[in-house]
Image (cartoon, rainbow, N blue to C red; front, side):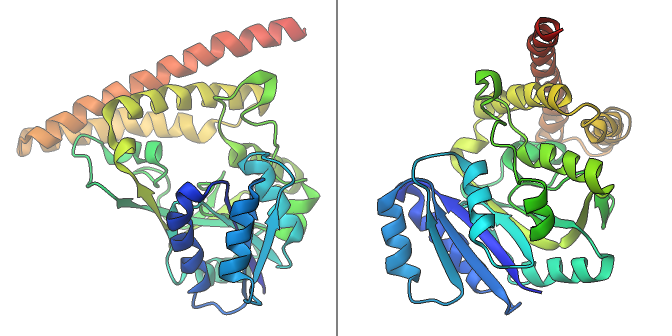
Length: 313
């Protein structure tokens, strides 16, 4: 089974981080791996691709004619790939050396159509003590409560997700209107929408293998409380947008909210009583603050998307 890993970038400003991501793919223990590098309309970046990787037979390079965004760049990468499976990783991530081997084992064992793994944190400026693990998803890291273990889920994070390439192409890849539909640049969730179509068309979700690990670099600005609150608001907004675009797509979020309020929060309160600490108290408070802010974003999205539904009726 040949696996093509699509890695996109659009600026030389991130090239050092991008190179670490690329090298982590090239250093996989699984040998039949192809790296597909996509420059999003930047010829200077494409030139660096050719200079640094042009002599490697396991690397394919592509440059978009213009800047088209991440989702279309990933689609273009999948089209020029030659693998049986196409996997995606971000340019600020580092794959574990066994990542592809674990994904392949999942495909072969489960006869999966899509597979993904766990995102682990790589704290560039240290772990923020106020951020509860239940909200690690705000920084692109697999959070507490995501899954009990290996098994089928709706989708994994976009920096650790893969599909059988023929299935991906049959579904026409990622919907490039996500983040731009109705002029809405704040809408996120390209992998959610694609995986909802996967489930509709094939009756399958993404098989989650927590041993297939990718580390996500969490830069200092992403640990700023105000940045996280802003992200929480727009994540809530995006969840309502996904409901509008893909009805019944947020069942996992509803289940997680129940766990958050009726399992995780009480457990944190008990632990605080048994062993008081400033960090435990702060995380308990922030758990409710982030939940409320996500809720406000959801309600704001409901106002907008309900008006769109009314205008379309």
